[in-house]
Image (cartoon, rainbow, N blue to C red; front, top):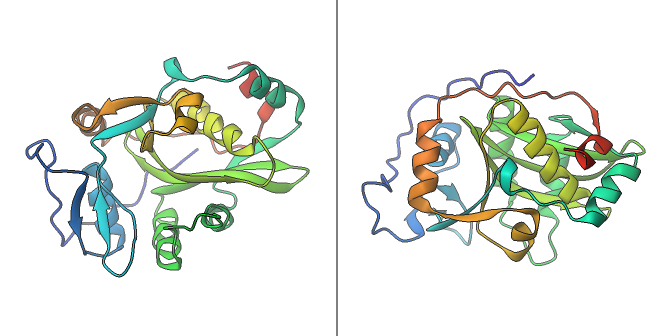
Length: 233
């Protein structure tokens, strides 16, 4: 089971209260740093870093993509894959490897070495988690993100075998909601996320939900589990 994250203290940087300042656009600030207390303060306020160039920008989308049990969609082909593949999933077994896999993007990446180090520290403190998909004991896909109360803020995913990243998404959803979690945050809406059942909600709604459950601890299972169970859930 996931243990409660270790406290990180107060951030020395002030992030805007987006509910009190709804007129702010998606880019809410520049600068600050990637220290654990900075990142946790940002995520608790619905903001995340998206490195581009030398100055560090902080974003909070005005429309947010979220996944919940009731909206999840597994295509027939994905269910068939889950039932027959023989894969398994784990949690926090290969955090650094999952981040490195997510950083290997043809179109370029915001997952810089500094980001990998920063989220690695959050992993050590119990805030950041990875979900691994294994085939024949080989890491073939995964996803990482942060647990903020009952919201899991998914950051990025990857696969080396077709379908493995989709499996990771539904592994997160099944484990998280079974333990009492409410929402998987996918940040920006995309066609791909929509096909999995992510729905678009306003930033205001997202922030209200995030704040209402920001201090809830989700004691999620980290055991190795067969992917075949996801075809039935």
